[in-house]
Image (cartoon, rainbow, N blue to C red; front, side):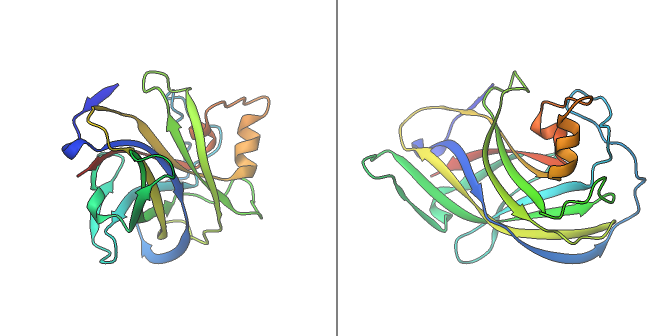
Length: 216
């Protein structure tokens, strides 16, 4: 695992939640072939991936200014605690606190669903408790959305994240935090025999890593 020094002795613990509202951008991107995508192991996924998560933007309090952007190429972000929309300490804990931020997730539809999902898609937050073991996934939250996005179009999912932190002078282990989009019907088909996919990320239609440093 990677250790990083945090400014002003604020350490980061867990991204807890995301609340969603969908707004289509109607932005058409170049056509992509309907091909299989890769699993974590590098092997091809049995069904095509429906989506790609292009980026996650973390926004400032009331101004809406982008504080940080996580992409597949640049997953590490540094977010100032002072720009949180709200924050505080848990009752009875004078060093364990929480901070919430507005955020936006930009997605692109790559292909049509392998299976219809009338109940909607699941946005999941998964934490990797051990960077050296990709199977050590911990599911921390799930939200349902119904994105009506045509193939080759992008959409923005508006919502928010909540962070937990400890205000003690220490170093922090930067873990991997994963946001994913899951078609629950396709995911169950991949999970069941004969496919037997164990990883939530392999069952998902798209996922993106976010590594967070909470500062000041």
